[in-house]
Amino acid sequence: MLPFFFIIGTFLGTPLAPTEVRTQLETLANARIVWSTTSGQARVITRIKLPTQGKTNRERGRYFLDRFSLLTGGPGLRFESEVTTKGRTVLRYRQWHDNTIVLDRSATVTVDGDGHIIAFNTDCVPITGAARAVIDERQARAAVSSALEARFGSKPVGMKAIEAVFGLTTTGAFATPIYEFNVAPLPMVSHVKVRIDASTGALLSIRNALLH
Image 1 (cartoon, rainbow, N blue to C red):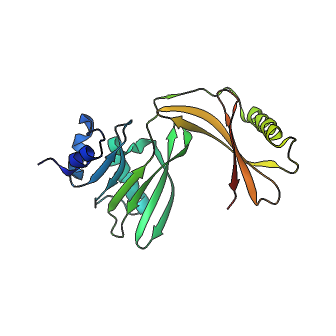
Image 2: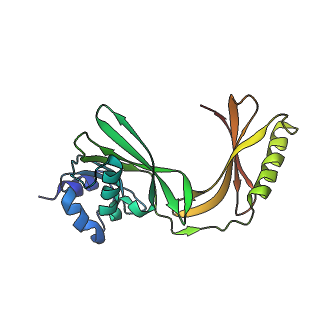
């Protein structure tokens, strides 16, 4: 009889495990694994209860990601936060590439009250190529000002950039460098999020949002 991870892969129409990760899969023979159709890595791992090493949940999560790095893309994930509810701790990680954060991409590792890893989820994809940034933050801020003036008909009075983040967005395995600005009126009840393509200087999006 085929191991369960092969069965679930067949039913979901996802690719079977690449040869180089099969040794890691032997430890997860009873797991439910949903594969990424593009990266060859796992998107979801559940039905597990894995003992780990480490004194804290953060150390245990890191151990899991490193031990199963071919499945999880662990080397590209950096710890961001943890939340404990009803005896379970969810560790949240952000994807990084060449020391730059990948926006809108994250992963979680769930640890039970006994320190066992019981779930992994991710929407991260390994990056194989990236465009080069050709504008700096000052030029990006000027592009934001022009974009807001074009959108609202005149430069909004009392609005200022309260945060600027340089990061990457991805299309498949290709990354685009961007500047993301949170621009808010005073008092800061609501804001707009503006993204500028750092490889071209073009406006990518202006999105209304709410400051919490």
